Length: 202
Image 1 (cartoon, rainbow, N blue to C red):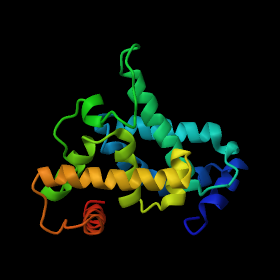
Image 2: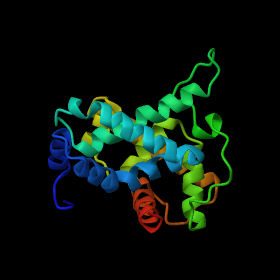
Image 3: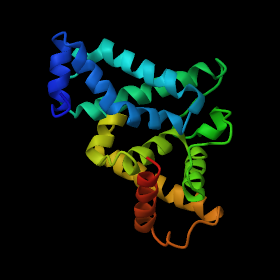
């Protein structure tokens, strides 16, 4: 069943094949868990579960206008936002384009990093706005292009292109303050460095 496409598995799952649903879960578990682990590590397991439960409820709503993977990350983003909203005071104004994970979540020292550079990058991203952190992680670690990111964020491609450029610049500025490796001379070299680190820590 592993050779079947996501869409084929989803169609079989819709038809009542529980094994197809299990195969989809296993195929995407690591990526979805990693998505949550850099933001709410203590809640990552619960968030993965809530994401796939939401997928179960919404599986018949997927029309195939985007890839199944981007549809799943869209659900994951909504689940993360829901959790963050429930932890704020009712009178708090929460803006995911401005507020960072470091501001919203009290986290223990991360154990995700296998080397200092990766840890530095994760910590820098956690100081960024939530939307920026998600955007960069999906771009670097899940290798999503502008079109896929636009689907996940439910925004025009031109808007995503601008947001991504700003997020990359913001990350570089944060890394510069933390004395990053000399390799980060340009945004392009930072991109290559970030993707390399992601591969080493996947």
